[in-house]
Image (spheres, rainbow, N blue to C red):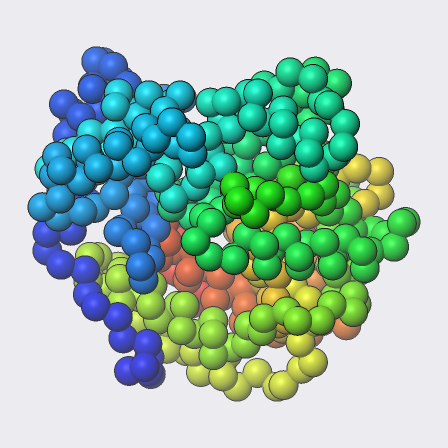
Length: 410
């Protein structure tokens, strides 16, 4: 099937070569020191507007490599110049020592990003103190910033610990679009729609600074779910109660995500995979064709608010409630989508852990008695194939990729 409308440009041989080679040892040694060894490829991010981004783990460091053919030293120098601007740059991060041209890569350590001006707070604790004081109306005292996450050109998260004993999380976005403001407005609407004693908790929004692309949130109390023994069943109960709460909220002005949108995402990933890993794509083709037909054949349902990127690392449990993080992809969609996505992530977690988590996948379904099992299975298969293709562009073991595909083909 795989409609021609979803065709994207195949990745060229030059990229396939660079993906196999990775950054040069010279560049790695320059950035993080001699003897660090080869980094581990964690993810490859594709964009319609930005260069392909390869994210590596190197000990305690994260290395970000943009594939920019023939850009070379001039591109790296211009990036360093922009980051070194005294007022809105990130000169405190010493970009001249943490960005290098490396063949067809521009390689850097995480935390430096010319498209995320809010990252200057990572290197300017006094500015972070002023931002918090301006948004909250009280002085937090000296602030210690930490980098939590960073996807180059897209977003970053800082933890800002104040001397007042309070922690805050700053989510940063590019300022050349209104994406960050739109997402903050949706989060704020979700916060206001939740009842005080809701089974769903989300981070409290504290304010935003559009000039920095910053939205500020209070930390969310709780601990990650433990899918083992009685604790695992209790976690499933609380998670499904939180999802049922989310699905009943009267949220307006949300984007929609239907079966067609899911098929588009899967087909785009399939074409990337086919252009770089044809043998793996050959195993995916038949189950993807069947899945596309099954998604298209689902009976229409009234779409409900869904998280759309729900996995175990987005969940914090406390008491008998579940807290959920990161509502960037909040949308009106099939009520089975979140359960199917979480089930697929539990299956992936079971492959890494070497023990079955199937009982907890079933516990999630039992906690949603109005949700047809067959419908959740379709969305679970979609997530399994998506995960297989995403992690094909990483150092994930091939055996794990094959087991994800086999499970999706069942």
